[in-house]
Image (cartoon, rainbow, N blue to C red; front, side):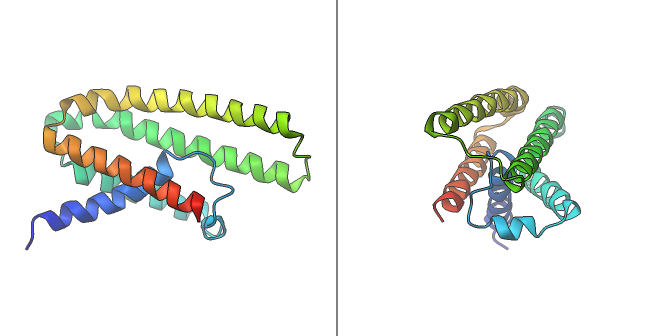
Length: 159
């Protein structure tokens, strides 16, 4: 059996994990209809699977395991915050709330970007101890998993 295959599978699944774990608002994305069709339990199960895939792809040592939990906790916190933002967006959209003029929309976008920057700083803080303990091969896999997630988000945005 090719030893690279489990790593590639974990990287692919982990990439999907990062796409959904660290992404911003997903309301305007083409596949949103399918995502809305999932129950809260389905989304929780997928989050669990994606986190497990990321962890498996990294092949952590027992010493590195000690630094895993803060990262996992932050990933889960981001997923919860994203779900709450999306629920608020849907509620406002359902109420027929006005979109506002160009400057109001730009202001809201600026606020979302500021919030996202703060979330990323928390993620960096949670990931840093683990990342610094990884060997070169693990760091490459971690980078690939993160890159795959960014590419997945871009693909969904662009349709």
